[in-house]
Image (cartoon, rainbow, N blue to C red; front, side):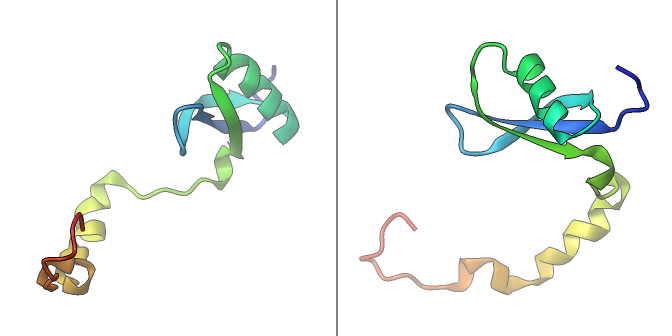
Length: 94
């Protein structure tokens, strides 16, 4: 395979889980080929029930150096933390 082919990120959902987990990357000409290659490379023991592939150029992420300014402002939004609600005694397991 040529490195001129797009890079794809591969996510597999296992039989035991409900979510897809990132398992690796591979090069492929298109999405169909990426799924077929992902099946061959990442599900050798029949452990997957679903495969997602996403062309890497479409994934956008934050910079870990910006984590403090990105996530700390959530602390001043008290409405996101239900600690000030009073629950009746009849309500269990909340």
